[in-house]
Image 1 (tube, rainbow, N blue to C red):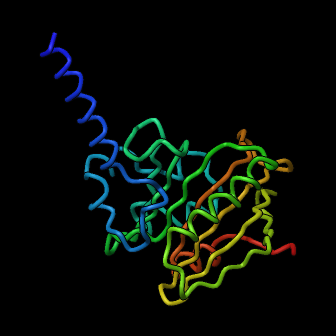
Image 2 (cartoon, rainbow, N blue to C red):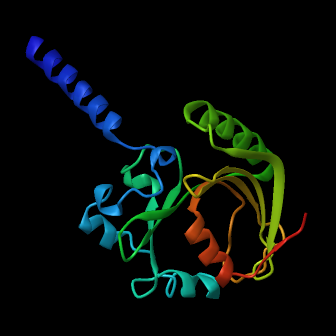
Length: 208
């Protein structure tokens, strides 16, 4: 009986240790190398191919193995990261393997999303050294002319690091597209260089 209790205790400790080793999506940094976070096997397994995934046409010009950037889509159920999101997208530069975009999403209606966005932004500010940050607490609203999806964002700018951090609610109530999509909460980090690349490829228009 003592041996059984000891085994159960050791398994519990191992489980706790494994959980501590897992990263949160909030802890992944722009500039981290993708191969320091995922194995080559995982990078191949979770490669996101815009040509076969029903992506917008503009995405096909932005990401792909033969493009400037590659995107990986990691489902939440894989247990690679702490189980906070339904999916995590990591975009890395094909030349140096450095991550330039992190996007973690969770399906959520707009009312609940606004509250979650405020909560998580305040936690992020409290945990981070943001002495060089410009924090825009006024909501920005952008509509994609391609899909009619409205992005309601609160943005933290880190100009010395050339990074933007977005806490976003995507409103798809007027979505125009062939596939079904959900409104969701999204935590995003962008390098300035990647954000400028996306803006040059996508048709985005500010509406406030």
